[in-house]
Structures are given as C-alpha cells and as structure tokens.
Length: 117
Ligand SMILES: Nc1ncnc2c1ncn2[C@@H]1O[C@H](COP(=O)(O)OP(=O)(O)OP(=O)(O)O)[C@@H](O)[C@H]1O
Image (cartoon, rainbow, N blue to C red; front, side):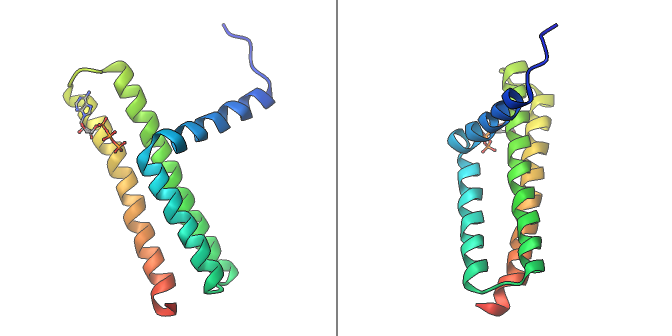
C-alpha cells in the first residue's frame, strides 16, 4: 500500500486537478467566464450580501458539477474506450447534471439581474 501523502501534497494535487479542468475542459472555461461576468455585474449593480451569497453558491455548484463530469468522462474513457451502452449512460447522466446546474444558474441570474439592468 502507498504511504499516505502529506496534507501539503494533497492540497497541491487538488489544485492540480482544478488546473487540469481549467486548461483542458472547454466548458469549464465557459463557466469561469460566465462566473467572472456575474462577479463584475454584481459589483456594478451593487448587489447586497445575500444576493452575492446566492450567486457564489450557484456558480460554485456549476463548477463542481463540471469537475465531477470530467471525473466521470475520464474514468469512462479509461475503463471503456470502446462504445458501451453503460458508458453512454454514465457520460450522459454526468453531462445532464451539469446541464441542470447551468439551467438553474440562468434562472438565478435572471431573477437577480433582470429587474436591475
Ligand atoms: N465509450 C462510450 N460509449 C458509449 N457512448 C459514449 C462513449 N464515449 C462517449 N459516448 C457518447 O458521446 C457523448 C460525448 O462524449 P465525449 O467523451 O466526447 O464527451 P465530451 O463531448 O468531451 O463532453 P463535454 O463536452 O462535457 O466535455 C457522451 O455523452 C456519450 O453519449
């Protein structure tokens, strides 16, 4: 069994995982771009603390869903590089999870920003 790594190495590996997603996943770049735009709009429209809190949780949900989607895609590609109906279900469900968070984030954005623009 491998020796347990130090906390510092674990945190470094975790940042490496985030860096991988940001540099390799097109959708992650889109989500981050949308998150930065939302951050700018929040500052520009002077949203209150609770509105910003809702936006932070929403953006975080989309980013985490995208990262879990990347985990599923990577594992499926490793385990089942050839077409398999179960591999398709795994990838489609993971992509569906991201889609749900993206749709809800649009609703949240609409509710918070529309009346102020
Ligand atoms: N091994 C496989 N077996 C069956 N279907 C697959 C397999 N790999 C991919 N697919 C199908 O192709 C679709 C796209 O898969 P792909 O791995 O290209 O994801 P992707 O386009 O990179 O996704 P994303 O845009 O989220 O990064 C999947 O949603 C799934 O329906």
